[in-house]
Image 1 (cartoon, rainbow, N blue to C red):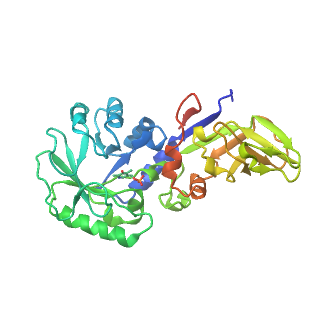
Image 2 (cartoon, rainbow, N blue to C red):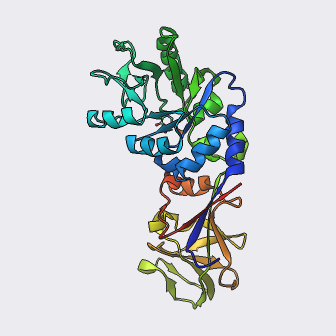
Image 3 (spheres, helix red, strand yellow):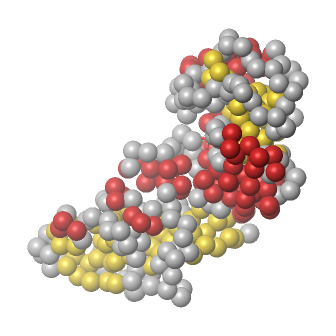
Length: 342
Ligand SMILES: *Cc1c(COP(=O)(O)O)cnc(C)c1O
């Protein structure tokens, strides 16, 4: 590889396979692809194009800006902005023919609106039982689940609350399911589902995505740029957090926390030439060290995510979810190269 520090690869075969998997059993329920935050770091346009080609009916984003950018590439599909926006953004939303989520009045004119019901997320939306604003531009009724990944009881309660309201508005498009609910709660399907993380082949449950028939879409690889041996008592990295007890071979990898390889991943495993090796010492802004059982050639591939090394593994060590791992990858071409396969 011409020396680029790292490369992010997006596998469209895997993405297509995930859309097909998520559409299984949906019947007439539409699949709306959630591509906010640049498609969870995967590239919103690439993901949107592939999902639409596989039968997704709409795109969901977080901001007006994300919606406007996608509208340039995709003139036709519904694009729903999930997060609240300010009235100053309404003209732009109208120009981009974006759908907006609304909770209570005053509501904008001339913009398709999805009324949000707070069934238990405790965030944004009108309470169950509160007056639902009637407005001629309302096309949808929606809610969002707080714990579909871990709490079946509360999820069923939220779904039941939503179903009660939804049954009063048969003319509206009703939608509540995220990835976890789509995979585990058939009763959450209604007229459309809004999967994000599962599209990308990442498990909403933090387990191996293969268990749900999903294939990881993103791989992230770098190379060893230097190989050296530490003598006993010598250290590598800031604050000397790793000190060699025995003569120890290490490789230096030109990726750090500014690239999205979090400082908390010290002690995690990466693949060096396909073999699991441990990250040693403090991860720097632009590089880290990996332990080797013997010297390898400079240029040996280091896989940070992919080739069987799951993002879920890093997420677990960081006590977070894979959403945060992939959204945290620095997309700048000044730091990493991107390739799309398939
Ligand atoms: C992000 C988001 C989703 C998708 O959630 P996943 O867990 O990634 O499937 C669905 N609905 C809303 C309102 C969201 O903000």
